[in-house]
Length: 77
Image (cartoon, rainbow, N blue to C red; front, side, top):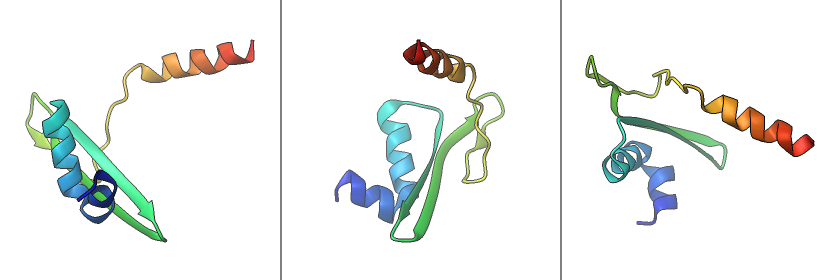
């Protein structure tokens, strides 16, 4: 099964594969296709408490938005 088909048909298994492949604590996936939304999540949301990630989990994005905003502004200059 291709990555595209796995993500759209089995997003939970896709999320689990991403966590394992890239050795990241957690990931949440949403796929919208043909009017249907499918969601999945896997991993540990908080490594200190061991709370499992789910599709309603809120992820902290840290300071990554500062870099993206700076790049976008610099493209305008």
